[in-house]
Length: 402
Image 1 (cartoon, rainbow, N blue to C red):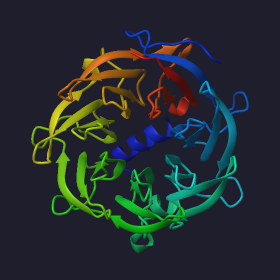
Image 2: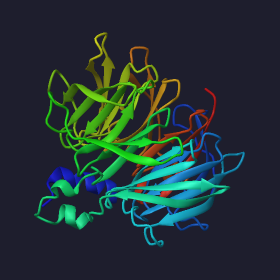
Image 3: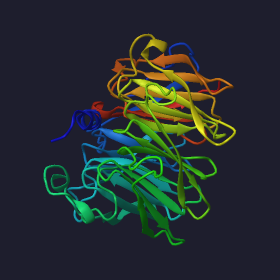
């Protein structure tokens, strides 16, 4: 049987034209370019969109779909308008790793896209040749979701890759390693990327000893700008684990932060983390407390609780099921949303790292912004994409200079 917190996580995961628009209190912040809707205008693969990535030259965009069990590809024109290009689904021949597709990364080196399949416990790799992508391989132990969840028999050594419930995936800046957070395996899986783009299994990390015996059911990862620290959110454990990472990719647990300890407040079911560009501040969306929790780095390298932001700071509601965050490249702005709430919320980052509420966007014309599942900024800070979970839509905005 699933406990209540697992059911909350699954509910957030599962149940989750052109006009002008602007942030409520700052009319020149963002302008709507396009609204993409699943099964409208020939578009496919936006059933519960979970993650969006854009190539470095802003020519292509990729979307993972949790309900379509799919990976969709869009081409972008000079105005950053999306055009549907390709789709891969679990129903396709020889592809069975995309059930509950969630995390997604794009690797410039080798033109590869890697997608996590939550229910399939898999990584599915796609590579580009000329102007089109093709299926490359699936990395998985081949254990079905029914075998993992419904069976009373322990999985044990059958879970050799630590990919059960694979949720989030990130890569190092040099694209030599990728790391996967897997909720059901309760682990971090590390893979090496060779010079020719081959992805090879390295090892699984399952604990944060001597501080904690496990990682609290990971759902989100982040690396510092220099890749010398790894941050792991434990959804069930209400915890943040911080590892030192050396140049060889070895990890050493140096701190575990837990809700209710050392003055930490509202770190309940943490689901998304972003890091300030200077590495001094951590921002965490917490689904269980409908809040954003902020930590700052001390001179000794440890982190301490700095602030928590909840619905009382934004007008009374909107951050329910907080699970989406994005930070501007200069670290001056934070975008946030709750998958069980309504609205996109913008915060100024003060010099001391604390957040102050700036503005909110509740709807664009007749389209309410609700059930937001992810927020993506392009590295050049010129465009913003908002995916809306069970609304099966992606909103594409242009960011106007402030």
